[in-house]
Image (cartoon, rainbow, N blue to C red; front, side, top):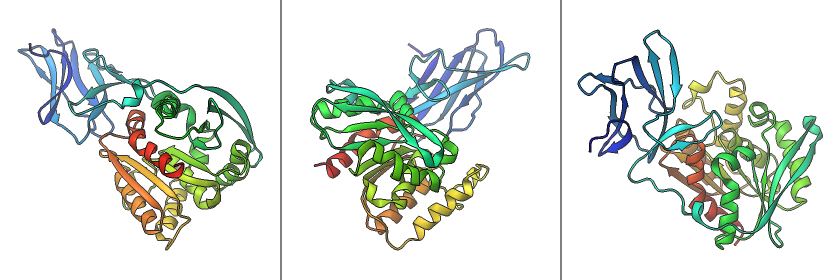
Length: 341
């Protein structure tokens, strides 16, 4: 039976259809971070809006539809003809699964026993106090994975579920998972020296004592974790950096309007120019269809040249939480096994 609505992959193309029996709409376009805003065309015989585009190098496509009504009013909606949804900080999107997409198996594995608690973490240097959520497995553990943007990592990328399932399956040694709230994110995570100082001298000691931690983050959170590790290398046993905002002028001029762009590029430039570095096991992941891919490739090469034990993985997705979730295994799993054999 012919599809009359929704989205699907057809060979080398991604296809979208929206019924409109009486052509009540003046226009429809797709909203997607890496495809741009391609316009649908109206097929009058079939009484529907249609879009067919070459399939991008991605296994999933998150999107919304922008509808233009006859009176000029515009609205952005999810695709009613496609029941799949992907969560995000700005609300749900529709998502197209291409035939080669597979959800991670740990989503369907049993979870290890453990408990969640809240910890208040004074950060005098920032004139702030953070409240972190911490998951601890049943039994003893003296290992810590600390994640920037922790609440979102858990809500949208299911980092807590990953931790509990991976421990239960025996894939990794038991560890404490610490979800750090972002606070003044656009300031603190943008290569801020006061934040790096507070993280390594106030926040982490309050969490883990003298124990080195594995630091994790995505986007600006990844940048901030690398910045902190360069500031005080001894606090870290490993880094897991996803789609880091490692802005460089040659790749990222489109980001120049961001208020801390120059501070970020100065820090990134200093890392790229360094002859050597405080090397630790480090895993970077980045989507094949995101703007940060070039600067992540560049950073991975620079860190490898400085002696870091670098694993760099390109996952067939974009700059979004589900793409980061899907890269946790095997890439974070392997890093945890390497650092905590």
